[in-house]
Amino acid sequence: MKIAHISDLHISGKQDRRQLDHLDRLFDHFNTIGYDHLVISGDLSDSANKVDWEIIRQKLEDHGLYHWEKTTIIPGNHDLIQLEEELRFYNALNPLPQVRKKAFDRRVLEFCIFFQELITGEEGGDKAFPFLKIINFSSVKIALAALNSVYPWYPADNPLGARGYISPSQLKALSDDSVMKSLKDCIVIGLCHHAYKVYGTDSPIDQAFDWTMELKNRDEFLGVMKVIHAKLVLHGHFHRFQSYEVKDITFINGGSFRYNPLCYSELVIDGEGSSTQRFVTLSP
Ligand SMILES: [Fe+2]
Ligand SMILES: [Fe+2]
Image (cartoon, rainbow, N blue to C red; front, side, top):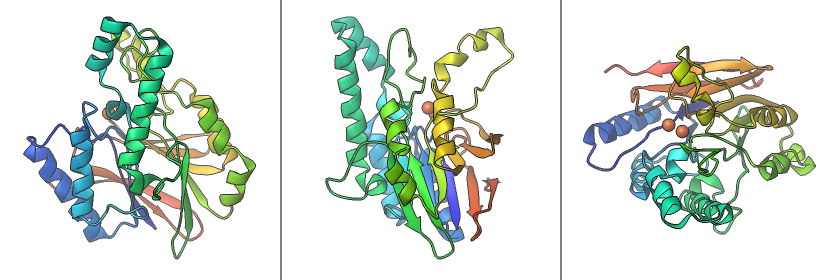
């Protein structure tokens, strides 16, 4: 069973022909290789523009990938938060945090409805995170456990909108006994936009900003991944193609299509549940 994983496309409108041609090429390549599933781990758009979601949906449709069993998508901060708009709204009206939270929740819902086919796959199904996608392949049964890690913009706590947080209700829902039953015999793969790893830098100036990109409750998240026996977690956000181990879980950072549109992550899972991962780079 083979999964292709890409992230952080940061599509910026229809004018960027080069970016769109690269996307066609990559999707063509996925079909040529014959991947069983494609995962896109957030930041589809560069500036929370629905036009960019439409571009991706259309490209997936054109390549026959716009099906529940073929592709899974989650949002990134750049899909849900438009920083300038947040600042404008805040400065003009200074709305209560609850009002802003409501607006954010509406945006999450909008994303889930827009990509319903790739999320719950059902009309009127549960549009909220977390969602579980269990797919039976001939050799292996895969469960994708997807969480929304995008945290609303707050002036002091999340000034760039890039900080991540997974709501306690999502973590609780995923640790429920009924979930554990449905995950029986599955290879469980966690999915969220933010990284577990704190990508530090040596520069003191950058270090001062590290916290603005972090997943705030990464250890609670890790705890739930252990509870559901996830072997792998796929994410994006930090634009680096990289994999790393934390407590016997392999985390795979799908890097950034925007940064390198020729590179993606390939994950192969055999009938015993063992996996091998590599980054594939297409020739220019
Ligand atoms: Fe990104
Ligand atoms: Fe991001």
